[in-house]
Length: 341
Image 1 (tube, one colour):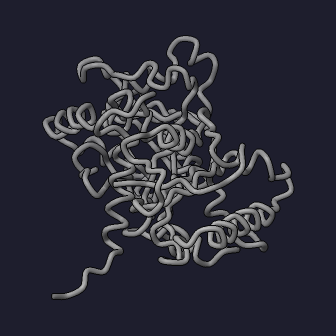
Image 2: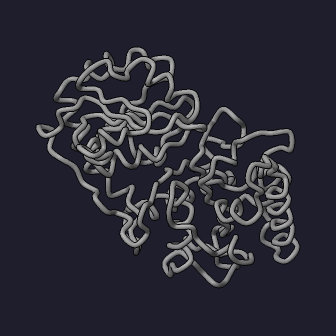
């Protein structure tokens, strides 16, 4: 597969943002920009066209904090696509169906009276392949089967993106379940309502108290737990899913309308638990009902699939960069109409 990178001025285009919870889009851009395996300089040889902009950089450069006005961002993207369509023939040949973007930001799904970031350009919104962290199938932006679900990754140190990964044996995981985090969205407060301070083997917190973290860090809690609870935030995405996998803790995903990433090749039922939001009151019952033999298999599978969720400084076969490219390519293939013989 060959990809051609379209035009765009820095820093919104071609400048990756490599740290924080929106780092997935930046790491994809960084690895794509320097890639010799997938990128071609000849657009006539390209199978796909990458729109190399960072939603995070767009926010930092154009959004006025506290204004709740995202229309300037939408207009910027509209004008960019119009420029691409006017300068090159490739967009107009397929109306953008062979173009793709990779974005990890909640604003793709935040409606207000000015509309969504994408909706100022109909073909950008409807035709392009969108690899989004916020893959909410209920709100009309993310289209399952066409678009690609992308994991939100919290990169704390871009120089060492895989620091501290790995976990402990099951015998060294005395906790049944762990969650700590800010009260973002509708799910986390319900989780705390039912499970905070209810059972000694279920450590369910809001932000991890300093009196607790001094004795046992967030990462140590994850490495000491059989299950790591991954509720949605304001939107369906959560960086805890990939953290759980990194620390070899079976993720428990609580986010209705969220298609797990890489489902085209990975069976999430083999290494995670998906709990409906309405079943939060039954959470302990659900987890305890999983036989130890099945749990052991799930935890082993977490270790096996971990390599597919790694951002390596240089792409390694079957890592997250390659897996996203595979999902995007499968999406494109599914759209191509093969004429009947």
